[in-house]
Amino acid sequence: AQSVTQPDIHITVSEGASLELRCNYSYGATPYLFWYVQSPGQGLQLLLKYFSGDTLVQGIKGFEAEFKRSQSSFNLRKPSVHWSDAAEYFCAVGPPLNDYKLSFGAGTTVTVRA
Amino acid sequence: SQTIHQWPATLVQPVGSPLSLECTVEGTSNPNLYWYRQAAGRGLQLLFYSVGIGQISSEVPQNLSASRPQDRQFILSSKKLLLSDSGFYLCAWTGAPGLKFFGPGTRLTVL
Image (cartoon, rainbow over all chains, first blue to last red):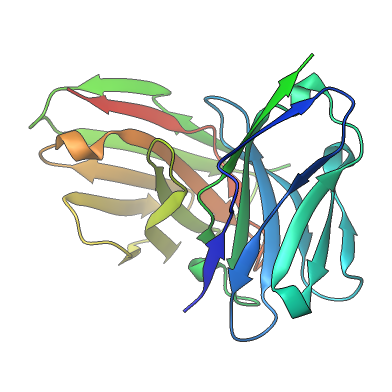
């Protein structure tokens, strides 16, 4: 069975500092991997996805993520955080070509301080 | 472009009352549709998904039900709400495998 772990429940970062959110998954093969962002009271917005190919993927809002097969990880990074990046971030994993079985992590809340 | 609507945006209901949440998608045809629930401090839990009109698959046994009366309409219902039904309900759709897009959500509080 697949599963997703986001080890950090809450991260506080200063504006302009770098940000890294961790995501570890359990899956028997190479899954589809996603990062979503949720602003307070809003739905989820897709930041980026990994299906295959280059293991470093670029997303919207200046985010990137790196797939590391050996570590079963798909960590999200941003070099310089803006106050508008304060939100909750969800990592998701699913079997290729089967979006019924997408599993989400519990989420990481990011607080940005001035 | 495709858009997804959910209403109401917020809802406060007493225990034992019925529930009906609606989701509609525009700009696409025959989408796969999903209902998720997000409880406070937790991730998303898939409740139902539908691959077509009248076709509903349930992921978690509970007192909720779903229906898909039209191609782009997905309804979440309950005959009698429980306190534990409180949460944030998200509708989602996929047109291509692996790409899931979410609606704005409905905040349900059961008192």
